[in-house]
Image (cartoon, rainbow, N blue to C red; front, side, top):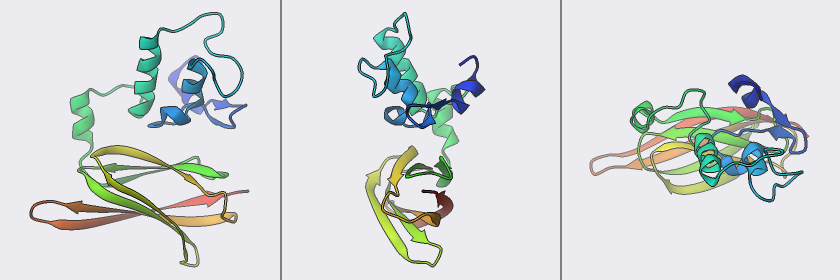
Length: 175
């Protein structure tokens, strides 16, 4: 892990996925290995230790998107100006993927998964969630291999308007 690119592209062999899952410290093998009882193997760093403050800083970095250049809190808030699909990772996947999106304001959100034949195969109700960047883990273990369409529906309610926004993406499940 000599540089940012190496860290972000490194796969944890025991975990079978990238070691950093942006916006999801609890799903990031790197963060898991810093905790007292990691899921696999021994705690990192080997032959040394990090302070709780250092571990929390790494957790916060991952939670905020694991960007190479950290943004200030004001910059992060100003970056989120629209309802936007940030994609899913990994893609293709088996059996879980993380669907990422941003909200410019609080909204009631649901994610609908469709087969290419147009049949809805899953609905995930997220309820009312706050402004910001969000990552939702989707487990497609009960679905057959194939290409699927996902729709994120955000229902914004303000004093004056009652708006619904929809964005769509595509992912591939390989079993």
